[in-house]
Image (cartoon, rainbow, N blue to C red; front, top):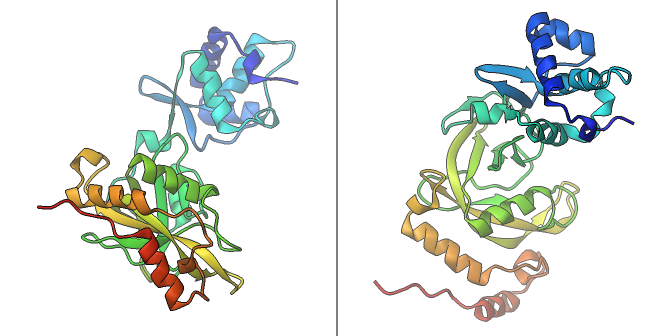
Length: 287
């Protein structure tokens, strides 16, 4: 079985690059049986090359008796392709690295965003290939009870997962939790009723709590509600003092249990009062 780790000859990749240039992109892809790359590209100066087809041809150049790789030989996904090329000293870039989204950018649909940046066209919390920034998507006509975004005060964003109790350690929720604990800004995308998806603003995750919600199956369940606050840019050093203070305060009282009374539709008033008293009120410095 062919393995990308078997490709050790940089000159074989350089040979494939020369063949790509001489043949032309479309003919080269047809010759090796590949579609155009969607996410990862080799960059040589101002030129971009489809990563998997180049690796396939390079393998055949290094091992003529074994022949080039086929699309089914790339079982490790795009990440393993990128690692193999970088190991041989080549620069690998993605579409989001070449042309990252900017606040105000708009698209007709999630599919259009996927076609532009890759990733996932359905999940509400994603990272684009080759990018460490988290993106959250909110749709006014979608199934989640998100608050409308606001540029001057915090707003709520429901966690990922439509069926059963949401889980902090699952998928997009885990991405948001890491963004919260590392104080990393995320991109907030929103589509109003009848409108387009837009990268509205950078936001900081200033806290989270468990709330009572209803799943897609109409069964009551605990849901995560993330508290987001718009910020001017990615650098936490420029964030307003009240945002930084909110993050510090929320870290001291964040609850990890979905069994908290506030997440239960059957919680009594006394249980909720006891919960507030037990957690206490964060103290703000004087001044």
